[in-house]
Image 1 (cartoon, rainbow, N blue to C red):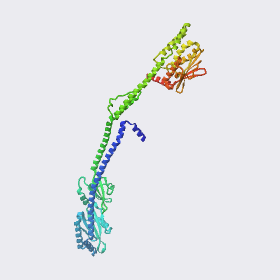
Image 2: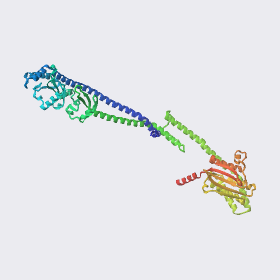
Image 3: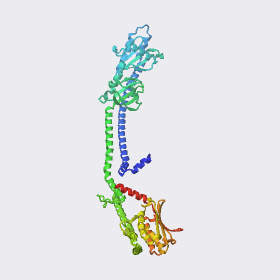
Image 4: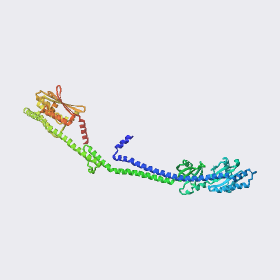
Length: 597
């Protein structure tokens, strides 16, 4: 996978590579900005937590102080001598009648305590004995229903004199601090009655929240386990499970009653009650959401703007590289074309200018080398071919003319016409400057005209046979390849007083090559004839010049891929010509030219 991505990046255009290099930096910068934004939000929440925590600490201390003070009052009442004496006398007295003096003393003491501690949200103080019930305020409206009072008394007596908070009836009657009053004298600890202190917890919580009363005020919720002791009217129907998600001493953002609140949880040590400080967070949350969306929009807009700006800024740079690539591609074709850009790089000395200048200089030098070497070499070959064509031995022409003259004097018949016609065609092909190249079929035609003349001259003493496969007749050969060899065979046989001469011209295909042989009887080649002619060990005169001409024509046409061999066999002297097989390519070119037509 990584290898494929790397390969795609390597083959990507230059503009995309620049963009790939810049994008990580742009995204990293955007990531840092996003991290900073989230850090600001976190810091804002932390500051809000500290502020709410301070309020919560103050409020918890206020609640704890009030409740602790009420507990102290309960202890003072237990230890009060007048109350202990009055309750003891009432219990020790005979009969069920309560001495009025005992009732009055208890009422006076309770009323005194009530007046002293009513600022701590004590609604009333009540002492209940087996013989009477005393209220501090003496108002009948504070009298509890008998069933409720019986439950409270039973709960207090089960605590063996310990203080007990009763919160089961807080919605209607507030909360109660109760205890069983035991006789302290002589540590008898018998039950004298039950102390009931009623506390208005709602008024207490509302007064604590009063300094913060506003549209975005802080609210408090007081809970005893799963029971809600106090909740403001706006949060009366809150979901309990939302508060249970908040850990003690931590903060959390919770959705309560369709609104979001910044919530902190604390605990009152004396009672074990949990209290929650709720700061409205809905408006702040919406503002944060808005700024988050605005920030993300601005961030992505900035990224797109950076990418577009990068492309715009890179376009002039990439344009110069594209121009250089256009130059390279145009120069790389077969025409070696040099494209001139409308922009001049002559006075630029940066990397782009130097690249263009160096390429233009290199292209000009290559064109110069092509003209000086390639074209000059072609001209040299052309000159060599023309020079070789001009070296045709005039001896043949003289002999032909003598034969025609001799035959004309002795016989006046058709052979003379044939000889004359063949001579005309032969001279026309020989002296033609139009066709520099030839084929095996054309070379055989040239040999045919030549043999027509020679067979009339030597009659039955000269015979030529060919064995050429039809598929090889288009084999490419330089002009005047076979005729000099046939002429050489006749020269060294019949003209050397031999009785007859039989010439065979054959061709066959070998591996990627065409082999053409010219064989004749009644003659032999000198050993290493060609090498001696090339090294001038044997001076080329007469027909030796024809052999050298054939060799040079083949070498110019085919280079090292051809060969010319002189072989002495049992009855034949054979010249073997080996050339590359180009018949298929030539045939394809012919078909292509026909298709184009």
